[in-house]
Length: 216
Image (cartoon, rainbow, N blue to C red; front, side, top):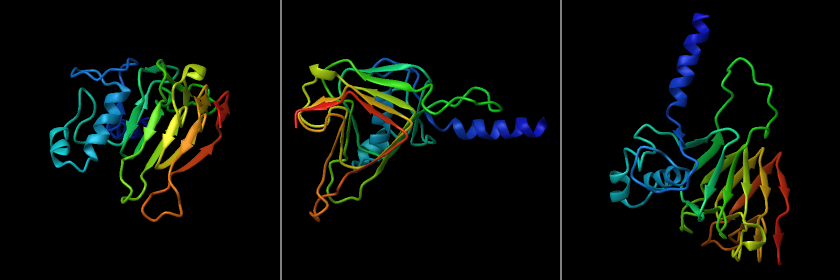
């Protein structure tokens, strides 16, 4: 029993470095709660080529993160997170959910308690791009998420759910209701034949892609 508690303490210490999203509201406000948008912005600032941004937000941004924070953003199981507009991801990160509260028993099937990220406006969910065609692609990992788009009311030209120009991996997730002129769910940018452009890549594992539409 002592060994078990010691292991739990060690695991808890490691887990505490992750960035915990504590509100389902889409906000960017200087307070004590952490939204998904603020968590991503913190990691973007930390990886920025602008030294002033790195220094200014080294200890966190609007209630998210600290100097010891990992690049893991943690959402609550079965919760719905609403986005008013798209979030730009410009740094490597992982978005996933909390583990089962019981460390000794977890019979849940992958994807059975996903967190939902849903757009409430007419935009896509994520634009993954650091804006550089010189640096190598960075990795973004989505796990145990339901990504829900705006459907037919979307005004997105390319990438109904995600516009990607980096290295994206999606696992145990559902991608639904994306709508765009091109790339109903995901539009992957970059031409491998052009040496001055990084080419995005997408790997999708054990996931459902349903009810996404593109005009082309």
